[in-house]
Length: 327
Image 1 (cartoon, rainbow, N blue to C red):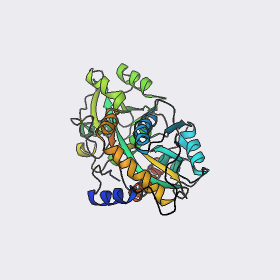
Image 2 (image 1 turned 180 degrees about the vertical axis):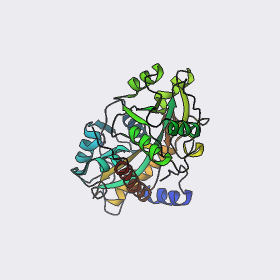
Image 3 (image 1 turned 60 degrees about the vertical axis):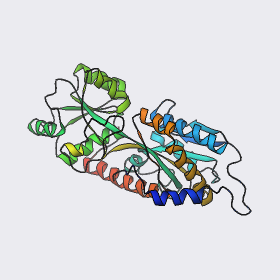
Image 4 (image 1 turned 90 degrees about the vertical axis):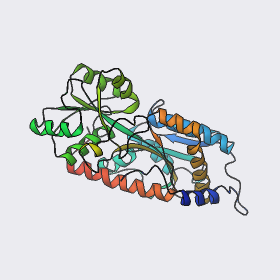
């Protein structure tokens, strides 16, 4: 499912206008104390950085501190379980990434229901990955790469900076399925070692985050082939997409969004949604997110819930069709 960076202006304005009323008749004003924003990944990671950018500005708007609480482990499962079991009062939120959808395909037993135990607040941002190659690789475009891979099945090595069972791995599996090619996956625990081996020629191809890859591209150590999103990335508008370069319909992004516990009152979800939409529309926040290689978004809770369901179905199918097993 493609992300639409321009959400319907009419529905958003109506939602914002209604949700900006923080007071219900007889209800307590929200928020009246600090809000905890749980992130299931370490400090300094992409999800953490996006959470802190949005959290700081949202705290200013609400005149309450947004405390980012990093609870890393199990691909975000630990943080999601804490949030699912938290009081549904709007004071515990969860910043998720696309790994949330990927977990549904890998983990048959989760300590929470991926949809029923959470209330969607908003889709915050999406960050395309980028397919890069060693400078000596003859293929300069995806169409040339596909031709080369079909002539040499299994002989081209494709590194993933996140390792097996991550979004960087599954973007490659999706490419293999949609283009009907055979590439040998080489998992790495981080962008640095993956890029090191790509630069040295130990692997010919890699999927990486934009922030990690762009300095190496500018230095000529690796070459850009295509980004994974349906539309070109704001941080790299000159680099074509995989979809426009030979694999129509290809779309894979690392996205970020905010959830609350399932029974959180709608008036509170509405207040959070309205606040976050205004934060995401502010130039300084949009610029800070773009510098991280991501595109700021914003959605209604209903749009985000539909998007999550579609992403869960999409990656579960990729995992099944590719026969991927977590290592």
